[in-house]
Length: 58
Image (cartoon, rainbow, N blue to C red; front, side):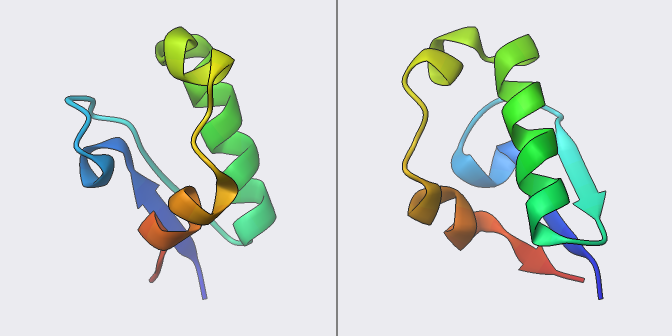
């Protein structure tokens, strides 16, 4: 089973979408993406619970 998340699901106007084999790997990609593409959000990241609500199992 894979895990996915998309920036658009949070309301952001961003094409970022990630699919990984593990939830931990997905969160690592999200953190890297926030740092590179959403620096303001990276400085004040949403709580992990908020991000986990956006994760879909595919």
